[in-house]
Amino acid sequence: MQTEMITFPTADDSAPGYLAAPDDAGPYMGIVVIQEWWGLNAHIQAVTQRVAGAGAVALAPDLYHGQVATEPDDARKKAMSLDRERAVSEIDAAVTYLKNDARVAPKRIGVLGFCMGGGLALQVGARNPDVGAVVAFYGGWAPKATDFANQNVAILNIVGENDEHVKQMQRKLETDLRMTSVQHDLVIYPGVGHAFFNDTRPEAYHVGVATDAWTRALDWFRSHLVPGM
Image (cartoon, rainbow, N blue to C red; front, side, top):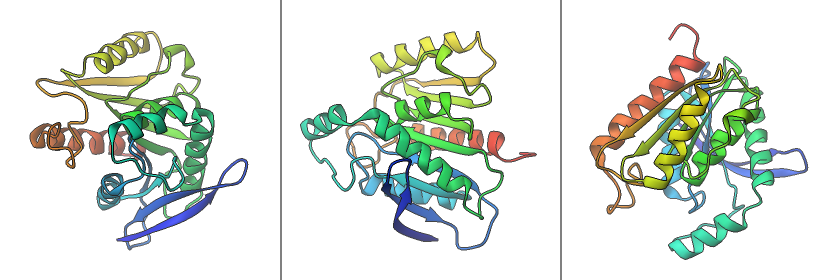
């Protein structure tokens, strides 16, 4: 596997990101990985490597541009001060970067996000026609169903039963999406709360649920990004 920090072009300038890809020429899926509110830390880099290991060129844009939070108060401040429009623009640019990568085929890109990144993944998927599939783990924000100008995206929402606010928000999106042509599914895992996938947080991590959710996520991307799967 090849891994490196890169700089990729954006609409206004450039942005940093962590790129992971298999050694061979491909073709592979292209998947953007979007950070939690902590930043592009070791956990998100490890997830990006796991995505690449599953058969994808994976790019995690660094939305905090080099800053990483280790305490909840700092993470909250960084998330609240994040310019969402700039962040979405940089995620769009990451989608374009993967679309232009010769190893990536077909050219519909997947977006995988966690917590803050889950909400951003949904927002990008709603409006970017180059996005073919989104998997949002406990997304902390949801667009309205009427925001989905990209009707050809397939949305998988994954949440924990005890993550009450996120659960209700994503349930509403699920209900409202039934009035559209957007393919969608909502998986609610019983007995777990927020951040159950993050194996660096022992108070929240649940290995059995995380394993099942990971399988679902990869199956979703393969089903909607790879012809014939």
